Amino acid sequence: MTILIIDDSPANLSLLQAILELKGYNVVSTTCASQALKLAQEHKPELIISDMYMPGELNGLQVLCQIRQDASLRDIPVVITTAGPTETIYQDLLDAGVDELVRLPVLPQTWWEVVANYTALPAHSSHAS
Image (cartoon, rainbow, N blue to C red; front, side, top):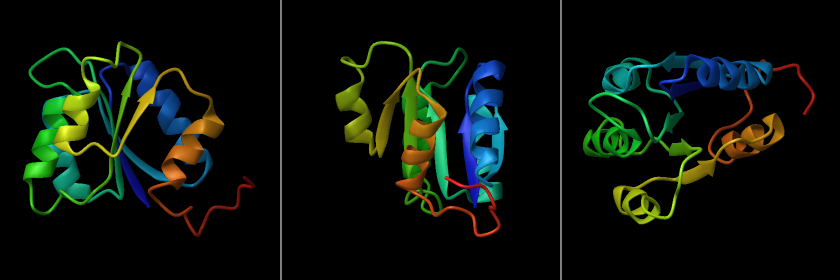
């Protein structure tokens, strides 16, 4: 069970990766949004989690649009995270096909619940929920 995480903050990325690995998920991550599509094509994750606001050439909405335009990736659920304002972006994300918008910060239990909505707990996980 593979999850791709895209976040420009190494601290946020490491924290979420650790939270998900506690439950036995395999996590592929990048701080570079422009690498997201390549990693998704290479690893075919069951879920993609992307930060909304990232410096550089792509933001979370643009990453989402690229994923939805790729026939081999378009059915993968995408969760967008943000600590910023959501009022101005929410409709754009819905129109682009986002599966869920998660307002940060959240507790580990909340992350496990969000991920469980889109994936099954890895069979090899021996951790109690």
